[in-house]
Image (cartoon, rainbow, N blue to C red; front, side):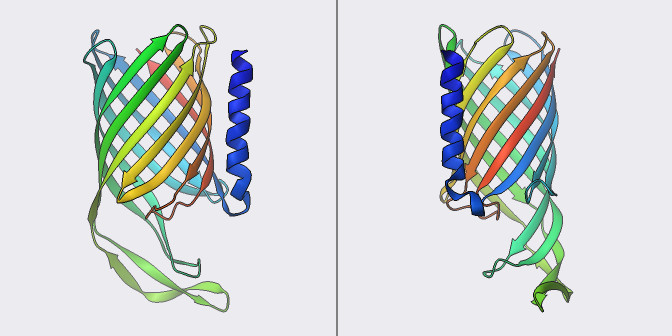
Length: 244
């Protein structure tokens, strides 16, 4: 019964995702993490992540981060973290042609609260997270469209440094099918100056042992008002966590 529900939900996500499939991108996200429980309430973690875009044919970003989580009560946790992002940025003009393509760093700080409640094998959680991202000033070679192809413009453009605040809200339902399998569904919104992104995910945690965990998911991202030129995207995500 539980597996049928998860499969039906995944099919619904795929149906939503394929509605505009011709204009959507596809990417693969992979991550590796370590997690250390200091005591009954305090946990620290760190990890690296890679993302691709353009139908998984081009690197999108690398990142490395660290964080801390503290259990305030049986149902409420507080967290804080920092992530250094090396971002492959491509600026696009109104005709859809790239006019800059370069790598640039971003510094991201976040704090959040996660409330959770269990109903037997089913658990529901709501995560509220504020994040601040700062892009330092960067210069990049500009391009122009010539005879249908991009050509070097011969000059650089300086992109000013800027900061951005985003409020992220994620609702998740997870079901413990067995000691090994924990399928889940989630929906997340990113809000800055209006709604920027929505992410719908279906996946499962896989407990290989007490120390080794895997996570596999399909996610569909929509970008109603995003300024990072990401666009709508189908994503396959795979993660590994070592807990000690």
